[in-house]
Image 1 (cartoon, one colour):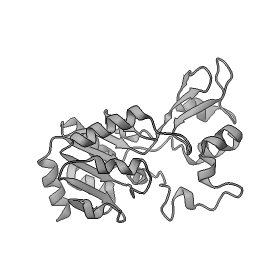
Image 2 (cartoon, helix red, strand yellow):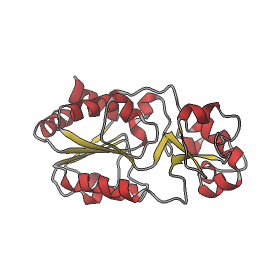
Image 3 (cartoon, helix red, strand yellow):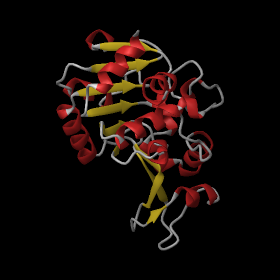
Image 4 (spheres, one colour):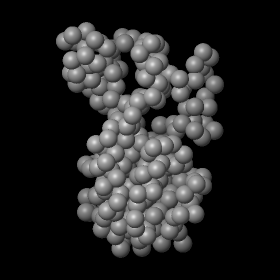
Length: 242
């Protein structure tokens, strides 16, 4: 019943915005952060927690250890888009979906064909010299021994990923908010909506088609016009692709 209702709402909409979190990429074998099997609950670190490692201070003071963790736990170069990414790209191609707002840094939405993507937390695919601002791709970082260094000035290369203690990009946030405000339908998926400020974006939606798709309940379920507790890749496949 909920899938048929979702199909009906999608069919009746032509200004859809999707807002997604880590759960969108778990079907691509990229672990999330906060679930029982997520990155933050792995017991493989002794001296530091993942939250400490993924902070600006740690990057500056323990750059080699940061990159050891980052390369092994944050980069999944062989990951491929799943049915959720493919369904959203299809909706954009059909002219129904106007924007994807994501907390993910893996670039899978673009790989699937989505073009108007706003990455709140940056991307592993963009890296810049901390001194001269030269751009480097993901392969450069992966193939660098220990700490990636700029081949022009020798300074440390930093991923364009938002670390703890760093602010989100205001331009990205403001543009994403504009799309959410104007949307006739907002689909929120694969996120527990517990991480701020990103989770607060939902409150800017003004329409009456708020759809929440997540494996577990969220604090916003009571505000949704339709809440589906399930795997977002499976839900969107059935609603959009099949």
